[in-house]
Length: 358
Ligand code: ASP
Image (cartoon, rainbow, N blue to C red; front, side, top):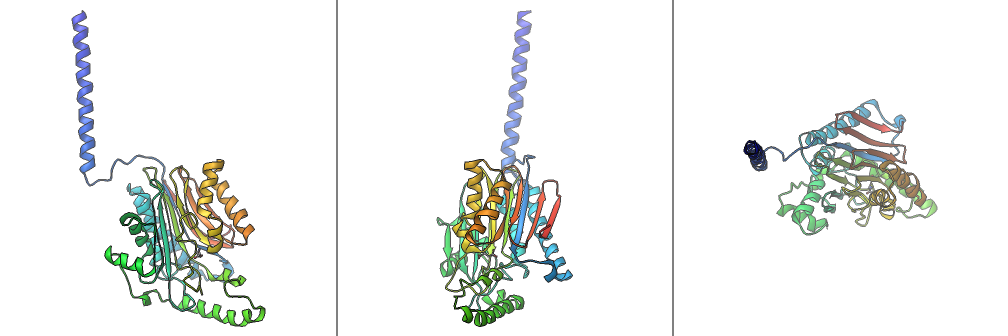
């Protein structure tokens, strides 16, 4: 009887040992296959913005509104597809942003606003919530998709931010597509610059303020693009890309390429992309402050976003908004302006595209 039990015990041990060997083999095969690495069924989601500002229905034609809705939907579906297929949050962020950068509707890539000198100077940044690594570029004039250069700065250089000619030299070495600066010309943005310059002449002479201080600068920014995503591996990422503010001078740089102001991601809390009056977003360190309120004060994403966008930024005199997603897939789309181009898709593919306040 005792011998029978011993054999039974040894037999069971043998079966368990065989099973774990099969599992080990499966794991090592997986790592060499072209299929995405182990994809779990965790939550995932993506949220984008196409800029915040004085966006009013009464100023929008039906066809322009339809064009914005269609482009936002295309951008978010593109990023969502990446996530659904097990891609990383950083891949989803860049895929969504590339769609908006290539569209003349938004103030990023093609469609960027004009500087006072009638040029286009682009800024962008990305941050990886898992590694807390980040990349940014500012004041570039020939990069078709600045967000891709920001990723290259993060992945292929030992720096976080490159600017101007140096950034373009780096882009060349990394084979990042460059275009003639005339690529960024759009009649709509050029006319906006002319209108603002006209106003500047008449109104500023009157009260003697400098262009940078005048309140109508509020109307000079529209359409920065950004994205925040959570992937199936539990990793967060965020990115932001912009042409900055119409009529900007002196190589002015806004919040979009500043890590902690325009973009922030941390797997412990959330991923955030900002849009708005950059000077105030830099001073309020908007994106990092939202993360910090969650980390140090235990606020929810929505509570933290409201605190910063509805209280801290307006208290300084600034305006704008953010989109953000937290480590559990909760989303915030918070703004204190009349509207913000925005869209969200969750793991079930439920789509939410909006422009105005409800
Ligand atoms: N934040 C951008 C900047 O100040 C502008 C915008 O978001 O519309 O450059």
